[in-house]
Image: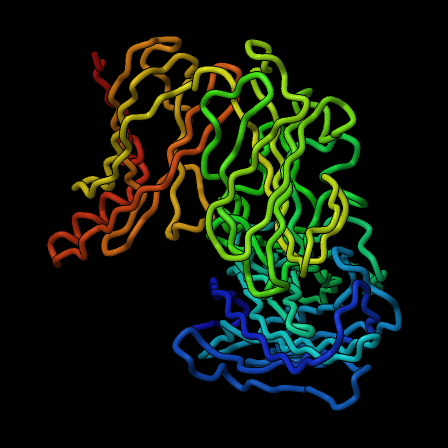
Length: 534
């Protein structure tokens, strides 16, 4: 129960709901006409109504809408306000723009039932194309008792509180002419005077600390992201990043590589191992099947998995190998191959031009794969630029002995969590291992070992067996794990996932498991064991 002049901790989880009524043509830029926000569904954690809740949602789209609750102790009720951006300017996909001004009326009140959740329905009115979209999301309120020490400081005497847009808020998707666009809420920027620029002067933050006995203003920002798939090879010659990096519009009917359709990014994700897009969102970099184990003078191939989709009558696949590690440039002694499929399945791309001589292959080279639909013959497509549909995937190929030759990798339920076991045939160039966990085979993936699991004998031609225990799991759930080996050079290789389902506990088992999984000291139980394999 909330007491006079005191604050109790209030937590809320995220609820996201999208209501969309849209049928317009695709546009690369949109004109924002107006943003309005309506407060609704204020509630306690049990679903009841907060004490004396009042909504002040006006029909005037230029007015601030408000929600208040509690019994005033002299300075009014406590609550939130939102005044939407009245727009009138163009927004480009990926550009952060102002949604509106948020106000926390942080006042001392009495209440027998506190407002723990409240939804804000943010309506965006657009022109060119004309569209109206409503996004509902929930603000989290973290209030503190007005007693010292204060968790977040004491700006105005009593303890400060926090308003949170949790980072777990899902991106909210809208559909324009069958193509999904994404709204991302980027966060708050405090504004002492309540003035909000159209574009932020700093990076928005999902956490906003507010002072007691004060009206606290913050500018709330978001961005619209086009459904575009980018590559993740190094950005030589602008081939990965905007403005002209390789990118594909993601459509519901276009072809794609592997099992998973490409996911959208704001820009390319370049890194030295071409894995920037692998562990971000879904692991959609899954089109590469295998490669020639005996690349020689004048010939070598890669096998690619292609889902043709339904657009056009064929899927055209293009591949480049960057032998110089300086960009995909066919005129610079790099190789190119292309092919097409009229039905889904594997396609072999054979490279016959500008391959290095046998014995002179570089240790590593980058491979770029692109696919798009066509009707009739396949059009010309380069290693950069925009494609109307399809996907781009980048890989780093190795032409040296593998750092690790993995014989097996398994996951099994155990009393202390999940026991992971793997065995290697050889470890010619191995510094150690990392373990990634997810609750879905598609990701996202989280590294669960705090430090690199060291190799038993780096540089050894012999294999070894390892075990490692993940204690940070819950009973009754299914977990997926991926093993990553790390070469002495720092290069990494991710192996295919394995899964394990933990049994639902009995009453006794649950008590035992919960105690183990919530005691910080038991994190040390995650250990490493090994034996040499001959």
